[in-house]
Image 1 (cartoon, helix red, strand yellow):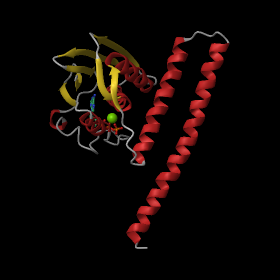
Image 2 (spheres, rainbow, N blue to C red; image 1 turned 180 degrees about the vertical axis):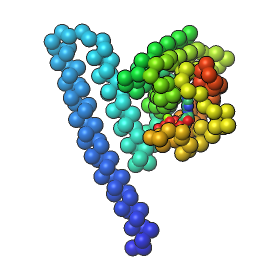
Image 3 (spheres, protein in one colour; image 1 turned 120 degrees about the vertical axis):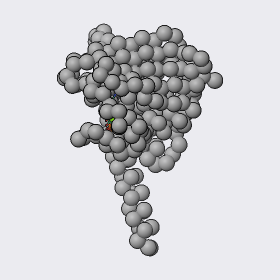
Length: 223
Ligand SMILES: Nc1ncnc2c1ncn2[C@@H]1O[C@H](COP(=O)(O)OP(=O)(O)OP(=O)(O)O)[C@@H](O)[C@H]1O
Ligand SMILES: [Mg+2]
């Protein structure tokens, strides 16, 4: 076998092995989170914050599974109708995990809702990527604002933060794959958002970035 084919086969095997092991461990996380949920219910424990955390873990596991399918080039994207408000709120809840020890105030205003045709996992991943960037731009204390509405045939979300702004001369580079200003960043988040959203006929853009706030807008057409 020629070297190039051998390399591709090795790479394919590596992908299959790693996917297999990730899936095994995802199943363990999924099973134990279900056990925790069941036991809390059995003991009559009503704790909305724990329930929310478990729901977030389970949604996150589903997103990882979808990513593993992508890795195997199996198209499991599912464009279905989802409630705009509910899906957005799920993304916001998942993103809060990135707050860690920062003091971040989340303000969410959703004016109205409708069903939108999206791949749920990909849409939520975009919301997470944008809010995660917002949290990372905030030093220790700040605010993330999410404004959403159905307007002129689009489901529009504006996500802002009051952290360090993006320099003017870098603003047209931020969607490029590999562009990062962070020591531990990979410069993939916004590129992934662009790709995922365009596959849904949707769009993302930077509205503004200055001292007061940085704001991104995601708009999905309503059919
Ligand atoms: N809300 C924001 N506030 C300030 N800068 C931002 C914001 N969003 C994006 N940026 C800038 O755009 C760059 C690219 O963002 P992107 O999400 O693509 O990659 P990253 O965050 O650096 O790495 P990762 O792959 O982990 O997401 C960031 O490094 C940062 O400089
Ligand atoms: Mg990022």
